[in-house]
Image (cartoon, rainbow, N blue to C red; front, side):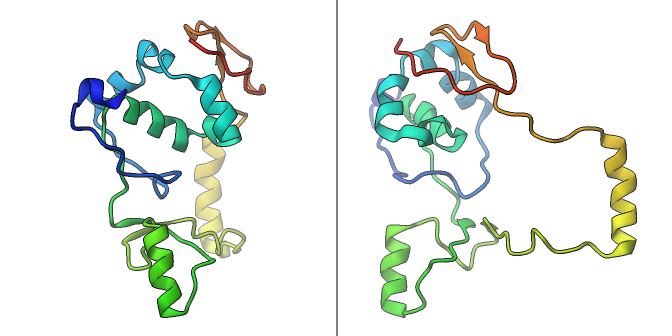
Amino acid sequence: LGRERDPCFSLQWMHFGLAGGSYFRTAAVLDAFAPEAVARLDWGAIGQKETDKAWSSDFAMHVALSARGFTVFPWEEAAQHMKNAPTDPTQLEAFAKKWPAYNPDAAFQHNHKEHYSDVVDKAEAGLLSKRLDSLGDTACHGCVWFSGKDFAHRLPVPSAAPPPQDP
C-alpha cells in the first residue's frame, strides 16, 4: 500500500514503538489517519496476527503511516532504556544490532522508571499540590473506541475494544 503514494517506499523500522515520543507532519497525519485510508487496512487480519499489539497506538500509527508511504523511524537521540541489555561487549554489540532503539548515549531515553516511586520532598510537594489540585481529574478513564467501518458509532468510555471489522 505504501508504494501507491510513494513508489520508492520501503519499510525501515521493523520494531514496535518509537522509543516514547514522536513528531509527525500534519499533512502525513491528516492523510494517513483519514477515515478512508484507515478503512483500507485489514484490521481483522492485523488483529489476528498481532493480537493485542494491533490495538496499541505505537503499532497502529506505524501501520497507518507506513500504509500511506510515510517513513516511520525513531531519532537516533530518542532511545529505549532496556534493563535486560547485556554487559559483555560482544553480546552488547549483537543486542544493539537486533534492537536499534537501544542507545545508552541518547539524549532522551524512554522507559526510565526507576524513580517512579520516589517520594517528592516536602517543599516541592507543596508547590505541586497547589497546581495539581487546580487541574481537576486528570486520570485516564479508558480508551475511546469506535465501531463500524465508517467509525460512526462511538462506544462508551470505558469499554473494551470492539471485535476487528474488515472494510
